[in-house]
Every structure is written in structure tokens, then in C-alpha cells.
Length: 70
Length: 456
Image (tube, rainbow over all chains, first blue to last red; front, side, top):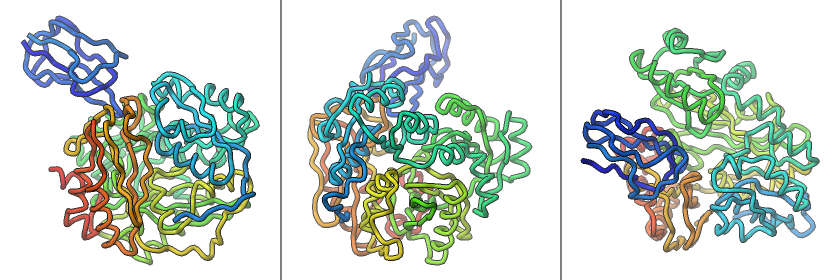
């Protein structure tokens, strides 16, 4: 199981994946936006997205959970 | 270093500054010095910033997202009406190059501190601007003269233009919506990237293709359109130090521009401004081919430029003062035939970002100590205790350094970077230290890829 967390304070611009989806290593899960820059959040291993903790428009803090991959 | 306007020089009773951070603060400073009442507008995220406190009046216009505050024309015009503002200064970014907003300001009976809306429109669309410049005799790179609609059209156009090509959002700016293709294999992806950003950030899918000049220097010319249609050019700024097509450091004079090239670029910039009946402060950007020394038109920014302080430092001219005077129908405060460029100036943009990957680093500033000394000017948007939020661009401050020559300016810049202390978040100050120490930058022979070489 891997917990994917936000690296910085950001807005959730786009949610690319969904709960239950199979993702490959390096797949884009969500795209954050901070300071006019898009920051893709990637899966670090292949697996199933068992939890998606954010929705488009959310503000995440550094360290906040974005998704769990199992 | 700036000239000072004496009492009674107020050309406008008041000005509302439709912007935030360092540029709002900088415009407010000149307005107040000229005896003009300065009105700030701010979002809920910015209530604690210095520009709000330093204005004569400040109006909360909305929540943090730009669309609901600094891009909300209605909220800004209501603030202008409620405070009795007589003019609107847009700064840079946000609504500064929005011709519709400029017209709304004028229609409300207020003075727009900027060029005629028609000039903003003509230069805002990069395709029409390129065509207009070519007709005016300003050199343009080979490129498309009409919007490119799909990847197939893009491939056909690129084959004629020749690789490498740059794919750009016609309505774009600020380095966003640009993607380069080195060869046919990269074109479809570059086209899709540019088009999705074009729609998302600029609300227009129009795309143009242009020959990508590399290696190149990015050099721009400051112009001022005076009442009565006379234009003057105030020298160039070298903006080749960029990451993600966004500027990080600028200097004037450019170490890559000879006197002959400078004269030709200034002449072309004046022709560019004349072609659109330009008034006020504007900047004509060019790419200079580092191998041949030829230059081509890139775009015109119809507003005050972020890096305007370096021009102010070598000329002693306050560009915001000229903007306010011209907007009020007055001539510039100096004799255009007696402009003397003295010494060398460098601007380093201090961003809230990590100094290696350049990723955003919002946070709370726990300590902030600015460098001081001869030739040092800091245009800062923040101070200790402020929160830097993810809603706006990462510019914290502009560290500007003047010296009697480039070597002395570099020496002072190195000292200033070393003594600028910002804690609580990551900044790119360590990058600036590396830049100033690098042989490529110190020699002056750098081009637009210098940052990628320093960080590869």
C-alpha cells in the first residue's frame, strides 16, 4: 500500500483517476496547481486506487493525503 | 536614483491600483510621491501584505482565487466608484492586457493608465501582431499568418517553416501555452500541449507556429508613447535567463547587443509602437539569434513590465511617473533628447520556489531581511510574518542592483544575494548565487538555455 501525499500547498485542478481504477507506475493521479504552475501527482507503483481523498477545487496542505494505491 | 516630482506636479487626483504584491506597492509609492491618492484593492488572501497598508485607502474585493478578485472587473470598478478613484493602473498580469477591461474603465469615466484598448487588441493576438509587424517593416521569424486548427495543419505548416518550431497560443503570454518541437515526431504533442493551455488559460484555441530560434537571446526594448503620437525608446533589457520560458533575471545594457544592433532594435521598437498608435509605457520583445546577430519580433507587452526597474536605474527615469503623466495627457518629465544611460543594472527575481527544480513553495515568511547599500533597490511584495499563498505567482521580491559597470554590478549583486535572508519557505536565492558565480553568466555570453545548463 502506498499513500500519495501533497508535496506543497496547492489547489486541486484536475482529478485524472478514480477510486477502483488500475494505474500503472508513473500514471498521473491528479494535477495540482500552485502559483500558476501545474504539478502532476504521479503513482509511484502500479496498483489499484483504493482511496481518492481529494476533489477538484480542494485546497490541500503539504503532507495531505491525496490517494491510496494498493 | 529616481528623479523626484516637485509639489504641485499631481496630474491626477487619485489612482486605483488593480493589482497586488510588489507591483501594487511600487505603483502606490510613485503615486503618493506625486501627491496622487493611491487606492489599493485586495483579496482575502492578501489583507496582511504591505501594499494594502501603504495605500491611502484599501478595498477588499473578494476571496483568494483571481477570478473572484483581481480578475473581477465588476468588483474592481465598484471599488473605484466607492472610493471616488479617478484613474485605474493595472500593473502587469491580471487585467492589464484586457482591452475589454480598459474600455470598461474608460466607459465608467475613469482614466485608463495604459495604451488605447485598440493597441491592446492588436498586440494581444500574436497572429495579428506578427502580421501587423511584418507590414510595418519589423522583422518577424518565418511562421503562420492564420490560426492553425489541428495537428495536420500544424505539420504542413512546420514543414514549410522548417524545424525546430515553437507552437504558441495566439492569445498567450507570460511563457504559458508555448511548446517547442525539434522535429516532426514531437509536433503533435507540442500542438496538443499548446492548444489545451491556450483554451484553459486564455480562453482561445487559436494556435500559431513560428521558427524556433536557438541559441537565442531574449532582448526587449522599453518604449514610451507620448501624447501627440511621438514615440521614444529607452534602451533594451536582456531577459535571456529563463526557466519554463519565464524570466528569472534581467539586465541592461545587454552584454550581447552591439551599438549597431541596439540602434536597429530601438528603431524597430518605435515602428512597432507607431503601427498601433501606442501611448504610455510598453515593451517590444525580440529574439536575437546568438549566431548571426539577426533579431525578430516576439511580442509586445502593452503594459508596465516586471523588469522595468533596471531601465529606471540606468536612466534615472521613473517609468510609473511617466505612465501617470501620459495618461493624464501631459508630456514626459524629462527631455527625450537628453536621456543618458549610466552604468549597468541587474534584476534578480526572488521566487518562492525550490532553487533546484523550481517547484512552488508557498508558506509563511518567518524572517525577512533585505540587503541594503550603494546601488541596491529591493521591490518587495512581502515582509516577515506574511503568508505566501498558492493562488498567485511566486514572485516575492525583485532584487535590483546598479553598478558603474557590469563587473561592479555583478560584485554588488553577489553580496546582496548573500545577505538577503528569507526564512520559512524555500526561495531561489541559492540559484541566483550559482547564476552570478557561473562563468557563462559572468562572461555575458549566455543565451535562453543558460538555466537548463546550470541545472542539468
